[in-house]
Image (cartoon, rainbow, N blue to C red; front, side, top):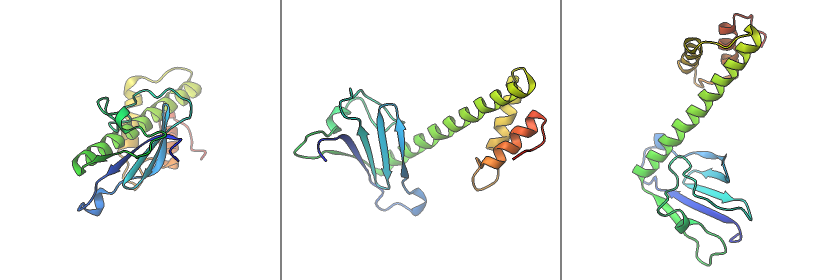
Length: 161
């Protein structure tokens, strides 16, 4: 396993309440593959790639980025985030994820609006669309059916979903 270039961060959540749990999942950010396993975040870098500093929503810092890269090491080094740093990182990641989703919804709305109406929507219309999506009261504000319903409402079309 030491032939793969990776960086591992341990998220110290000892003595934390259950509402502050860590994530489970994966992501791809520029030149790094990231796996979230509760208290561990593993960053894998492709073989033979130039490994440049990548901040990844506050996960890495320029001052110690190289120190925590592991490749062909006899001793594995990992970074530890205390609870305060862990919570700050998770908040930054959540904000980044939210912004990426909202940007995608905005671009999708603008595209469909232009395809339907033949001209670009004004800023107020785009903002109203995004506000309506963000103000949803469902458990998951970004349900596909809800997005289409709002999209068709703003396009003045009957629902076809």
